[in-house]
Amino acid sequence: MRIIILSCSNLKISFSTPRPALEVYDGPYFKTIRKLKREGRFPDNVTVLIISAEYGLLRLEDKIKIYDRRIDRQRAEELNKPVINKLLRIIKKNPCEELIINLGSDYYPIVEGIEQKLQGYCKVKFFSGTIIQRRQHLKEYLLNA
Image 1 (cartoon, rainbow, N blue to C red):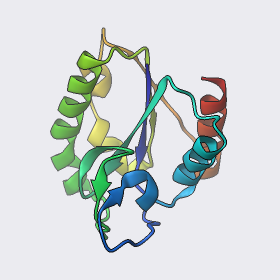
Image 2 (cartoon, helix red, strand yellow):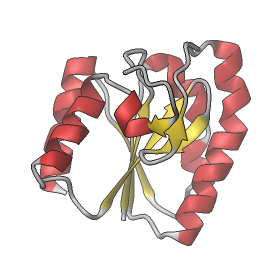
Image 3 (tube, one colour):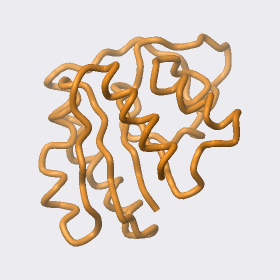
Image 4 (spheres, one colour):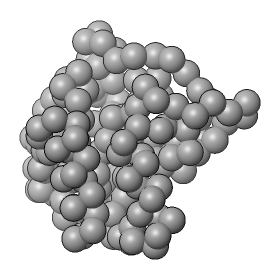
């Protein structure tokens, strides 16, 4: 299994009832994932997790309500330990060969120390560049996984 971690999106589709995170977030990464899933080109061996400013670590299918919380340094520091611990539990249950982290700079404090915690469990790789470049990296990665 391979895991990709994305940050949530401030672009959201409003629903009156909780919906799967993949249906709520409407930023470029989520549009790419939905398109590949619709076309049957999303790889079976990849799990996508989301770091939400409101909810912490989510799966695409986790149902969430619409919210308007933005990440800041304090919230990122609050989320660090719970997010890393939850990720470690997931990886211990489902062996992971590679973890891809594709986050904006405001989200990096949430995953600070992750490489040390996951040492021996899986390889950690960070996507870098502009959001456009990271979207392209994501698409290429998913099409070649």
